[in-house]
Image (cartoon, rainbow, N blue to C red):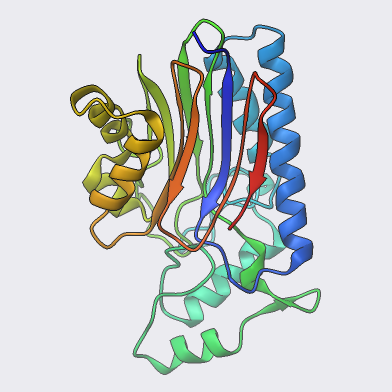
Length: 268
């Protein structure tokens, strides 16, 4: 076995105008969650418990689109719990409704032929002097392999802003947005429908098993070959203690670490 490894993400598809302050806040959150997972792994906590611990921490911060601060449905709700609703996501729901659209990357409304869509895109809602669109990255996830070579993955999301009530995205579908088996653990983020069509997370394990690819090569292959025109990203670990990530969007909030001392946090 190659020792433990951990990766976390806070969503693929990043506003190119995201202020440096928000970038640093995201990096600090990812670093804090990485260190939480590292501490647990050093204490020999099983991989499945580590991914749950880390994703709960990611969910508790409204910076990312899961748990508190999640995207709201078209009726302005998630569940019967005000804990999940923040000033920022109410503002983004208003923007999406004015654009008569959902938000695929959770910040930028899809192009619309209606004048309301153009008006909302050109005159974004502002909060604390900044466009509201800069406040909400996407899905969160964590993948872990422990010292025993056991792989685990967890993914959590608020979904699409202004989504229809009852919509199910890729995150809870095992094999699509989340997968873990003997070879690897994978957590995806991005356009859910494209990820579902590709069964993206499971496909990483499949090409490792049937094509004999290593972890990073498998990740690169599925991102390039399986997403048709969809935008997405993923993080992965292997049972050998390897860690990898890949995305075809302009950026992905991510971080990773291995037992040999390697640690990295990035966006672009």
